[in-house]
Image 1: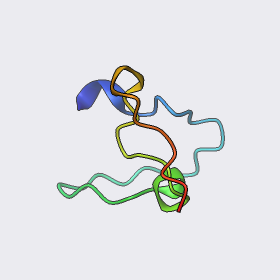
Image 2: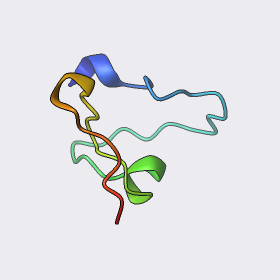
Image 3: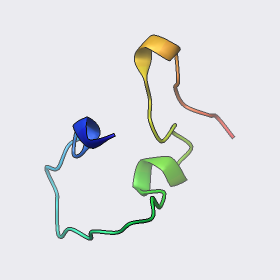
Image 4: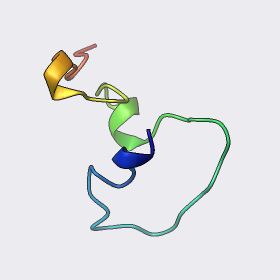
Length: 47
């Protein structure tokens, strides 16, 4: 979804990488949902 880019915050942004493949970032590797749609109650996975 193109509307979600940088919505989690780019305060400490050190670079950008453009890719055709979606790879999990810092928060996703920490257990958070990749899309985090609050209306669908997608939250922390809590591994």
